[in-house]
Length: 330
Ligand code: COA
Image 1 (cartoon, rainbow, N blue to C red):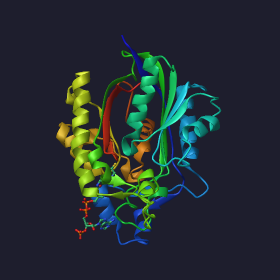
Image 2 (image 1 turned 180 degrees about the vertical axis):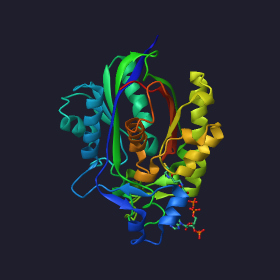
Image 3 (image 1 turned 120 degrees about the vertical axis):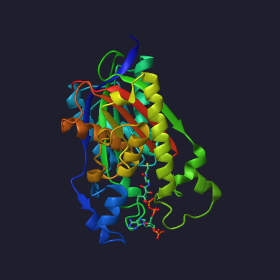
Image 4 (image 1 turned 120 degrees about the horizontal axis):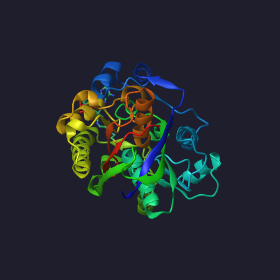
């Protein structure tokens, strides 16, 4: 059997501060009913001032290391859209906070698909023999890039973090990442974008417009592309593993909108109750959403050892992907 990256531990962390739909409705022209019926979201978490992405990332990482029963890794890969600073990357700070020493640590940016890109990157380090064990984290202080008075984005996004430990093993082991599918389309870069703050704005020499530091999203188009790409990517990993769709126990999709998750399940021919949902409690936590969902589902006893799982996501870039694995006994 070929060398493989095997999931060996999982953990997550969310801020304490719960923000309900009714609380948002006091700040903007929206209602609990609109948000629930259009997105499935009831509440989300907001990180308190004084805390940053690295704090959430380190806590999720600590819990994943504990779950794996290890206190060292050979690399840290952090998927995030909201680094502590534009420069440097946040992963080295997280490695230091966890006392992991002078190991390689770097950030991966693929917005809501970031965790899947992080898993592929970590699995690549293991395949190369550069690392025997990698901590892959998805962490976001996403509410820091959202205009909290904008009803088209504020209800949707929340903060959180999730992490897994990948260990070198072989493909026959439960937890082995069995198939990957990744893609992007830069022609859709403006679907989800922060216009200001980057080199494009500086190169054009135009002062930032007020509000350009916040994320803007063309929601309806994102919805359409997300359903299409998550479905196609999931089909691609099913073809690579040779799994019949009926044998899939859980679709753990990026938690953006319950209607997107239902539509992807329907297009795949998967029963609706096979699509794991926790977007109701956390909103869209971008790169954190898949590991947060995995930890949540495993912690609740929904995902059990031996279950066949398809992870899939779509996000800014545009970028998307899917990964197939069988859940290990953690
Ligand atoms: N409260 C009340 N009304 C709102 C609203 C809110 N928070 N946000 C938008 N509306 C209004 C719109 O102004 C529009 O009004 P109009 O018909 O008078 O123009 C109406 O509701 C419908 O808006 P629309 O954007 O077409 O709704 P939608 O059903 O597409 O739902 C999203 C909007 C954003 C929830 C949905 O498109 C979505 O989830 N998209 C994907 C977002 C996502 O997942 N992003 C991250 C991907 S990684």
